[in-house]
Image (cartoon, rainbow over all chains, first blue to last red):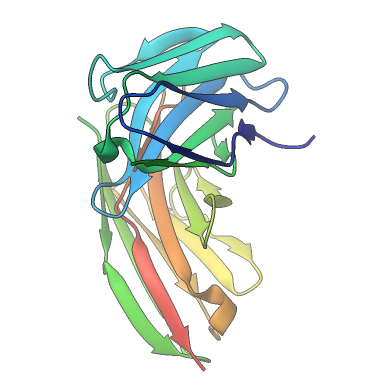
Length: 111
Length: 111
């Protein structure tokens, strides 16, 4: 298995633009997590899905953030409109039981 | 709310030293405790601990969990410069495996 696959690896966008981050979890894993990591706030859980259903989105910063999981092999995290303070590394992780396995992350820079 | 506290926040040692990293937690419906190593990119999975008193070992790294006192330690013996990284502790609850991360311990191993 190739592991958790995220795209793009890097994204630079202008303030106000829409940004879509993509994630393909490990096949067979039924939980998927979106995290954001910054120097100031560390690793924060934004939202997680179980069997494609959002279970807890309390970590989503505000309405500008939305996440979907239309099927077991794909998820998106969308920011619209983006702001400079959204600049961070966004990780997707999946789990089939106990441990979460992370993708390589998307480094987002909003200028 | 689940909580994970790691100590120390940072540590500088010389090659050959032994280090102990600490992780204390509060979690409802404990399922597992996880240790990750993060270098420049995504966290990589080290250990999953579910039972008290059973040491997990991988090379120079070992970890143990105390579910009564709600903490875990990660030991690294004969440290090498390649051990320099952020070490993250996370606890997973039974609610679809949601993980809460600590702020991490930044370990720097000098030659």
